[in-house]
Each structure stands twice: as C-alpha cells, then as structure tokens.
Image 1 (cartoon, rainbow, N blue to C red):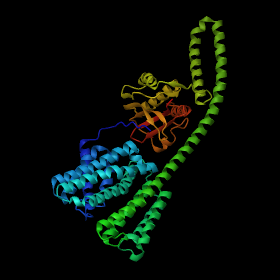
Image 2: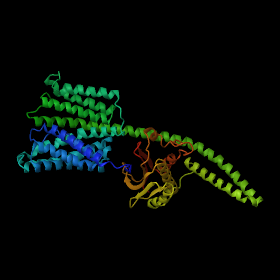
Image 3: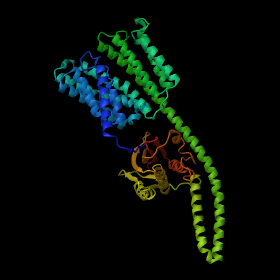
Length: 535
C-alpha cells in the first residue's frame, strides 16, 4: 500500500530538541547498565539492548534521533574508556549499525510492520545478523585495538562477544519496543486480556524456578527446567499475539540474566562472558521461532478477517445491486413514457418548447442517474480498456481542481513512466473525483490534498499501479473505518451525501481486478489507495 504522509503542523523546535535529549539520556542509561556485564573487555558486553532501542527509535521516529544515539553512545563508552578517539569511533559504529538496520528494514522488510509476518521476522534477523551487528562489532574492536585498549590477539573473541550482544539486543528489544509504541499510537489493540496477564505470571514463575537465585529447585535439575521457558513463549505465540510474545521473551531473558549474575543459572561457565554468551544463544534460539510463529498467526488472522469482510461486503453489494437494478429498470420505463409524452407535446404546441426544454434537462439528469445506478448494480459492465495512466491522471487534474475550494492546497505527484492499466477511464476519473470530494468535505477549514501515483510490486510479485489520495482532514475513527465501504453509510449530515462514494470506488477497483484500502486515524487525516494490476 502507498502511504502519502502530510504533516498537519510542524513540530516546534523545542519539542524536537527535548525528544533528542530524552532519547540520548535513555540510551546512555541503558548502555551504562549493559556495560556492567563486560568482562572480556570493558567496552565489549554480551548484553547490549541499546542496539534494539536505537533501531526502534529510528523506525518509529525517523533519522532525527541519530544525534541522540551518537551522543548517548559516546558518553557511555567514554565513561569506561576515557579516550575521545576510541569513544567517538565506537559511537559512530553503534550509530551506523542502527542506521543501516533501519534503512534495510524500511526498504526490504516493510519498516515498522516488519514483525507482522514470519518472512518479516526472518528478514529482520538476517539484517541484524549479517549487516548491522557486524558493522558495530568491527568498528568497535578495531577502535579498541588501534588505540591500545585491546590486544589484536583478542580481536576474534571480543568481536564475537560484541556481535552476539548486539544481535541479541536487537532481537529481544526492538520487537517489544516497536509493538508497544504502535499500541500507544493506537495502531495495535491496546488492552491486555486476562489470559495474557496469567501467561505473563506463569512465564515469570517458570523463569524464577529455572534461573533465579531464589529458586527452590536443586541446581542439578535446573538445566532441564531451563527448557520449560519455551512453553509460555509458544503458548503466547499461538494464543495471544505478537506484542505479548515479544514482551514475554524480554521478561524471561531479564530473569535469565539475573540468574547468571547471581551464579544460580544452568548456563554458568568458567567465565562470566562465556556464561552470558551461552545464555544469549539459548534465549535468541527460543525467541526467534516464537516471534515467527506469532507473526504467522497474526498474518493468517488478518487474512481471514479481510476475507470475511470482503465476503460480507460483496454480499451487501450484491443484494443492493439486485434492488438497484429493479428500481433502475422500472424508473427507465417511467422515463421512457415521460420522454415520449414530451416529444408529442413539442409537436403539438411550439409555445411550450421552453418549458419542455427544462423538463428534457431533468429527463437527461434522470437518465444519467439511472446509468449510475446500473453501473453500481454491476448490471452494466465497465468498459475495460488499456489506458495511459499518466494521461488519465492529467485529465482528472482539472476536474479535481474545479471541485475543491481555493483554501485547499492541491498537488498531484505523477511518477514518470507509470505503467498502463486495464480499466474504465471514465469510472477511474469518477472514483478519483469521489475521493477528492470526500477529502474536501473532511477539511472545512482548509488543508492539503495530495494525489500520488507510482508503480509498485505487490507481495505476490504482481506489478501494480497505486494511486493514493491523501488529505489532512479530520480522519476516521476505527468504527467509521470498519464501515467505510458500506453502501449508504455516511457520517455527513442528512442531505449532504448519499454514502455511495466509497462503495462506488470499491466496486470500480474490484471490477478492474484491483483493490482499495484506507489508512486513517482521528486527527491524522486519511489516505485512500487504489491498486490496479498492470495491463
């Protein structure tokens, strides 16, 4: 789906500076706590959740927070390695790691939606493992060795510790932070069900028994008990959701780290670094499959809900189409009788011609309404033909401009080289006009209207054209969004809309073999995207 984002108001500079300072402080505090676990080298720790924090910040808030990451990383590393070049190089590596991970996730794995499919979870793991974490580990160890804070002979073990710590930090921290941030923004289901709280309590009980120093279980059986933590993770993946699974993995790993530090964990090795490395490997191996399973369930449930909605929508349109077809047929017969009478009167009395012309205009409008009803009822098929999309959009530009008020800023962005589509050109213009009129009505005090068209490749590798109409209006509530395509459903006052506009757009897109989607929230405007297959 194409999302055209228009800023309603520019964020005040003091608010942006405050956000950067707060992010830097949080990063610094988390980094200092993580460096507490460093044993092989003061700057290399197998526990490094700041990587996950940095990636989540950039995914959710954008590159404006890059200064926060580099400042927090520099301060934290300078505190343990008081050498400006060393701390600066390490901070650059940490920042570059988060930037590269975010860039690849946005381009290759759907950005902040990366965790909503098993393929996305897999792509995120590959990006962090093979691209992001090696950058930070390589730059960091080179900085230590070249400035005398580490021996070159220790390059490999320090690099592995650094790499695995950043990898684990990203996999354990980023999903939980991103999913909870989306919850706070109202884009994910907010309430925690009672069974989720019970599952969290069960997971913490198992983690306490298996890992913590207050466990009543003998040390000889803890190695076996450690594998029981997989059960609540799988239960959460199958019965709860992505957010709950990511949160549970983070909670369990925190208890596991506590156990290693206290010397009561089944992962105890001769050194603290080796113990933490074994623990991190176990937690990551349990977390990734659980996240992938939760994402698979989420994707399947979303597809099922979408299929049910489309089925209900199709049934409603079919029933309404049958009714509309009957009304239009009878109305056509009445119009034909009226037209015949008018022609007879015109021949009998020339003085009534002026009156008859007015009646004839009304007749034409009635005939036009009948054609629209028949088209909506899908009894009159669309005239599908291969059309030049650029020309069609340029033709619609003037139509849209004349239909909106001067206090609305209108812009049309047409990507060069748009693919042609097979559609009814007139109905395409009518669909865009309907969307523009809806956007106009949603901005009574003025705003921005953006029509954008570009070539895309769908998830199934089908080449499509996406046309989005975005406004900065009032937006839709979740209740309105769920009923947006229902015929005759309208939030406008009586007499100010038929409620058929979006239903006609939906019918047009599906008849052309495409689809239509809406991205909206109260106070954030609305973006409607029509996706049509390439001709």
